[in-house]
Amino acid sequence: MKVLLTGCNGNMGRMVHEVIAETDGMEIVAGVDALSQKSDGYPVFPNYEECNVDADVIIDFTHFSVVPELLDYAFKTKTPVVICTTGLDEDALAKIDKYAKSISIFRSGNMSLGINLLIDLVKKAASILGSAYDVEIIEKHHNKKVDSPSGTAYMIAEEINEEFNNSKDYVYGRYGNDTKRDKNEIGIHAVRGGTIVGEHSVIFAGADEVIEVKHNANSKKVFAQGAVKAAEFLATKENGLYDMNDIFK
Image (cartoon, rainbow, N blue to C red; front, side):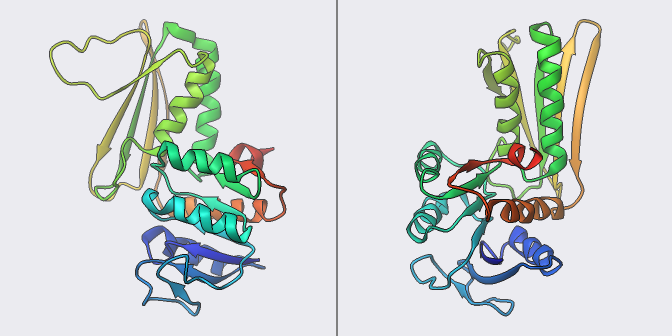
């Protein structure tokens, strides 16, 4: 399987490179990165217009601002793409929905198997506990992460909100003298500091008891491994939009 790795010289790109090097039947044939002078035995292009190497699948760990360009390239070349970048705006999400009719696209707010298991658990908790319990989500990441709250926190909130027929409102942090909690809220809080890889906690606070479900990633390698699994999965699929639930199935 021939992989085009976008963001190949970033921290996650380097991690994907390591995982692919350990994976039989898969190789990186090219990369796209603003830092194009650095490579590991394959050509690295500064942009998609200059990329002239065919690939079976694209793995993307870049910046949300360049994802629309990536999608245009994937659509033009009819190449399946695994989008691991978070913080996408409405225009990028709309383009994903549009292009998924013509190519296969895999997108997840978090590529970790464990975090997707957490989502299954909190959805079940929400369906059983109902509105009698207040839901709060706390996410922690390193001090270089540019988007907040994290894509994973949004993903968790949206999955929980589905259990409430999308009736809940999101509140991002609290500040001031008039912040009494409304029963219709899901609170989402972001912490940034040091080298925290990724930690997500979901709190269900009821009368006289609290239930907390938590996932902690100790290495970015778990996300790279998930991305490679997604690429293997996607390369054999028909056109459409896929996520981690499809891998579980």
